[in-house]
Image 1: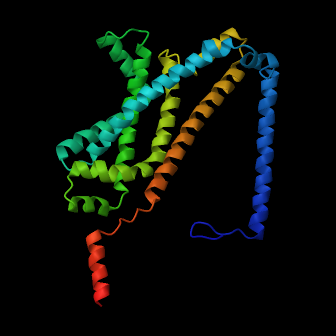
Image 2: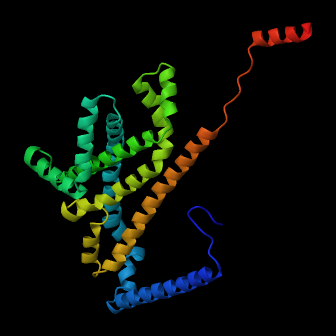
Length: 296
C-alpha cells in the first residue's frame, strides 16, 4: 500500500528485496557460526561451564539472587525518588514566573549534561568526605544519588514535553472555569499528559535498572552484573555462560517492566475513551415538557 512516506515496490524491487534478505541471512548465519566456533575452541560451550546454573543452587542463592536484590533495591529507590522530583522539576520549567523557570531549567540542563557514572563517582567522594555514611552502604547511596540526579532531569524534560503536546484549549478551558494555574496543571493537564509520557517514562525506568551496573563496575556496588567476577572465579572461568545468564535475567526483568507499563497504558487509554453516562432529566423539567405536550 502506497502512502506519503512509502511507495509499494514493483516486481524488480521485490526481487531485489528477496536477494538482499537472502544475503543478509547468509551473512548473519556465517557470523553466528564463526562466533560459536570461536567460543567452542576456547571451551566456553562445554557442558561443565553451563551446568552449575542448573545443578548447583549455590550459584543462585550466593551470587545471582543477592545481586538481583541489590539491583532491584537501587532501581526501586531511584525510581521512587526520581519520578516525583522529575515531575516537580518539569512543572517548574513550565512556570510563568521567571525566577522559578530559569533556575530550574539551569539545574535540569546541568545534571542532564553530566554522565551518570561521573555523578555516581562525585557522590561517592562527597559521601566519603562530608558524611558519616558507612563504607558498606556508601556504594548504594552513591548509585542512587547519581541515578536520581540524572534521571530526574531527564524525566523533567519528558514531563515538560508531554504537557506541551496537549492542545492549548485544555488549559484555556480550565482557566475559563476559574481554576488556578496549579489546579489546571494538577487536575487537567498532567492526567491527560500521562498517557503521552508513559512510553518515554518506561524507557527511562528501564535505563535506571540497567545503569545500576555502573555502580558495580567502579564503586564496588554488589549488583547483579558485578557477581560475574565472583562466579567466574569459583566455577572455572565460565565467563560467557555467566554473562549470558545475567543478560537473560536483565531481559526478563525489563520485559516484565515494559509489559506492566503497557497494560497500564492500555487501561489509561480505555479509561479516556469510555463514554460518559447520560444524566437523567430533572423531574421538574420532565413535568413541564409533559404539560406542554398535553396542552398542545
